[in-house]
Amino acid sequence: MAKKAPGVIIALAVFLLCPILAAADISIGLATPSKDNITISKFPFHYNDVFRVYNNANEDRIYTIDVVAPYTDVLDWVNVNSSIFVLGPGSSTQIRFTIDADDGYTGNYTIMFRPAAIPEYTPQNASQIMAYAKLSSLFSFRIEVPDAVGEGSLGRRPFLEDKTPKQKQENITKIISDTTKDSAGVEFAPLSRPVVLTIPDTVQVNELTKIALSSIGGNTPVDLKFLIISPSGERFTQPAVTQFSFNDVGKWSVLATIGDKIIFGKVVEVKPKQEVGSRNLIIAAEVVAIAVLLAAILLVRRRKHHHDAS
Image (cartoon, rainbow, N blue to C red):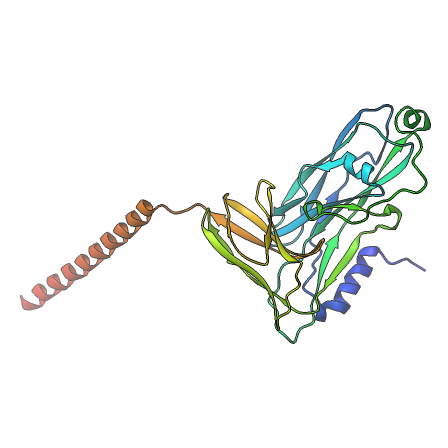
């Protein structure tokens, strides 16, 4: 009996659950590096490689790169050059990851890189039960620290070690977890009450803009916050109701978070500020164009009147 492909199972699950969740299209593609493992020969150690993420959707989407590792010290080795970003429809971006280890324990460690498409904000009403679906892909990368190398550094890892599974808000894409249980697929973020996002689609650069997150029916979660990322990757954590100045031109990622979970996102386009002088020139040009048009109409009417009189 033929096995069902994971993508078919995921698609079927999304189809069956679609009445209660925001749309989750197959909007992510992934090209993995040719090498999937390394052996650390000595400390300190440095390595870098690349993979590519694709937007298969027909609109702008926000993507995250989650990095998952079994221990805090191993997670600290790994960095990516961009962990939250916007991709236009049909476009892709190359992600560079680095492994920098000054010291370490003996062992074999599996790192998971989990690119994910953040669900878009969908307007809701009080009668809806919403569960936003984040669609992710995944590839693993194994790091080996041989006995001789580990013994010359930190030695063997203590048997009882606090893996500190909680992650900080500023490191929302770096996760401590048992990577043997990690998998790609659809991750649901259910909401007990519909959340309303108030924010314009486009704003002018450096213009103070009111933005808000609120729950229909009140009782907005106390840990409901904004995570806002500029085109250059700078992060801003903001309360649920605030005024914010977008200080760079381009496409910004605006994310709604509850605790350490991203619920949904929205792409906001920030445009250059139109100078007062430029606006006046445009208005003056429009006035001149209207005056010329009226003069032409008046001239035609006079000629017609003269022709009829003769």
